[in-house]
Amino acid sequence: MNTALAAEVFEDDVVVSLARSMAAANKRARELGIDVLQTLITITQCLLNGSTFWQINYGPKEYIGQRGGDLIIAIDSGDASLQKVLWGQ
Image (cartoon, rainbow, N blue to C red; front, side, top):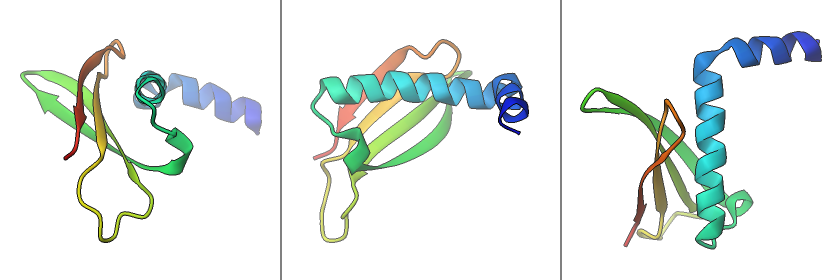
């Protein structure tokens, strides 16, 4: 089962694009001091000027009663290049 699943995963363009983008975003988040395993991660696929990118948000797991402080990283879905980094207030 694992071998069949692996083959299917690598043939899915969306899965591969997201995995590459997550790896790039996680690397940048760690460089900025974020403990990726201790955050709530949300992902949004966005389209801007004909380009598709993944917006990856790193926020606190215990977010009730908190404002801001999230790290948002936008990664190009085609080549997994960093597009922008935003810190919430």
